[in-house]
Image 1: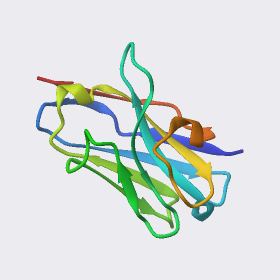
Image 2 (image 1 turned 90 degrees about the horizontal axis):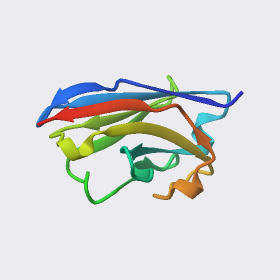
Image 3 (image 1 turned 90 degrees about the vertical axis):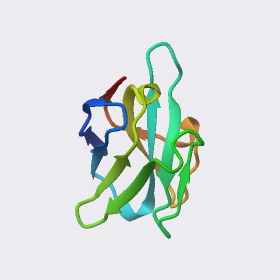
Image 4 (image 1 turned 60 degrees about the vertical axis):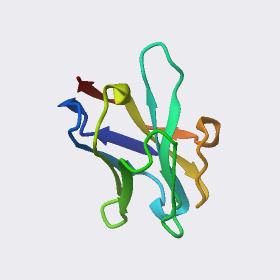
Length: 124
């Protein structure tokens, strides 16, 4: 069964950092691009960042560039989202997602496998 398990959310003060993890199982990790999305209350789910599985290129939404980075551990089949300089506007449920194919796209419709969300709350 194809699964993604996100973890690492929590409450942090503005300016702080968090690292989210997304553990994958049930599929060939190298053949899938992985992305992170977030959804704040009352808003649509939006892309945050994604990574190609072939060359490790990452693509960012404009609001997080310079603050968020993404990395992978292929041996552990896990991706990480490092979030620095967090702002209250980053408060949301964060979801990891996978799409078949090695190239990622900052588009919710491009991803077919979703994990459950992990809540990130940034206090001012």
